[in-house]
Image 1 (cartoon, rainbow, N blue to C red):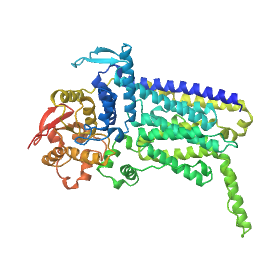
Image 2: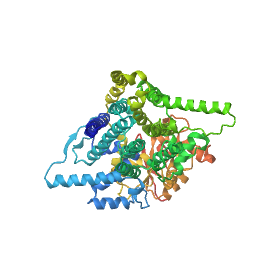
Image 3: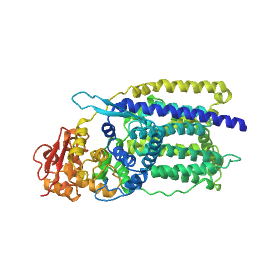
Image 4: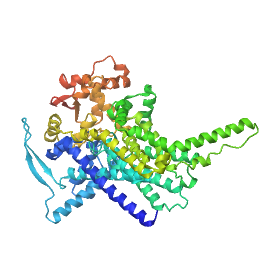
Length: 614
């Protein structure tokens, strides 16, 4: 390929990649708006949309944008005494909230520019909600911090689509392959990402860089096979940068990088790559996450903490419907066909070499030559082997925790691009000889993918809703109006995140469950949902320094948790077998005698108990 052709190909890839990124940006943005009617919600309703971990992460961004200065906001994050009262922690480091710090800084720059030039950064108006609810003010524009934050998240989603196209194009050596990847990604969008439903999660920021790292490693492996390999200094530097950023943004990135290292070592051991291509990266594994995976393999290793994870929908095993959906969209069949075509010739060569080796061993008993597979290894592109092994690793992880399908499905979309690779085309003689037939076949595949999956896109685009959670809004309003700013709260993890975000009250526990000390705190707080005596629960909450404890109906009443073994009493029966014969405590505190607590607020979903002096 001449330098002009190479530049032309690079330019066209850049243009298509940018267009794909913009398309995905608007796609996820409109899906979120359609699902929540987000633009017409009040500030507190918008914050309530960010439940559990999402609310926790967003609360740190809110602290930066509401502080007197960026420096002051950053100090509040590095000396945080609200999130794990009474401890003071470095939240910036502990929770991987560098994206929030970055976006908070950008918003402050934008806000300063708007003020300097006398511009109007947002427009506000009153929304009448009906059904006896009071009217609320709603604001639009980048001057509204939450909308600015989401805009950056959607941009990261656009980068994800751009990198996917780049990955598919480079792995297959064809821009058609990149287009196949992107089409498959949009067709299987629900199984590929959840940024459109849960924007503040760490994966929304880290995944584009994880994907970029995999793409760059693949490109370096491809270059290693060239007769005159071009210097890959910039690719190596970008690979280092992407791995650094992904580790900075998401604690789970280390496990993906560990998988990559293991695969690189394996393919080096089998001779697919040379020693100079192998790089060492250190990673440690958090013990409680290992326990989660062990609980999937050895069910009897369950305890309270692992069940808190595995009872969540995203940590359940992959359902059969997932595989059925991938079959209907043709993603799974096409991936299998692509891998079959790519490995067809090498497999036959391996069988031929093995047959010849054992034939000589039988005919000549003294035949001592070692089995030579070097020539066969050269037939297989190391980047393809790397990505196939990565697919297998993601499949194993996804079988243990359903949320990890968000790695598996995009990886399948990347491997679909191999349908358009020269390895696939060369394995079929008639396509190798007739270029026009090759293009016709690819066009038919494009049409088949589109027709089989267009209903998925229509179904996703047809989702329309309007967020409303008046019981939670009522609780947060009561906390804001009736309690002091220094009052400390304990309760269910998702509710604590909402209280921290919307009222700024100190909390003793939160949804970031990776920390052992926090797991122990949460165990004490959740004694409210156990079979212990009221006095024992009271002492546990009092020991943590909380002034108020919140009860939530769906954790109090067993009939509201349909999954077997996942009721709060089920978890406590494993943790505290001595009290299995006692009645559950929470229903009594929720609607009957709350002593030694004092019930100070209640509605259909929530109860607030005051922890007074005994």
